[in-house]
Image (cartoon, rainbow, N blue to C red; front, side, top):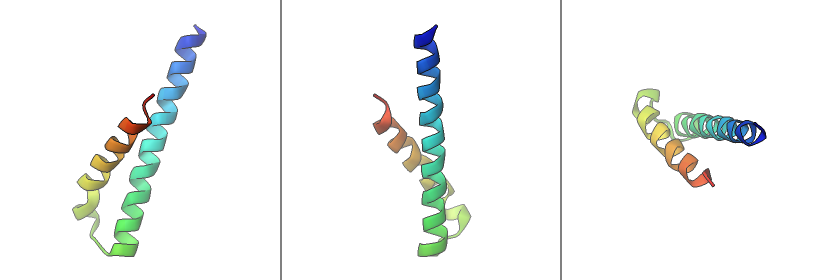
Length: 57
């Protein structure tokens, strides 16, 4: 039971960190670089998925 709870908490933290990275990448690309939100949507999601894969133990 404890192992499952620890795995679930870790998976939740991983998903939350991937979403946070996607939002940060979108903010930087939109406000600092000047890209439109439509142009960066897929790139930010792909980059956050790659970063999330690196975070998996």
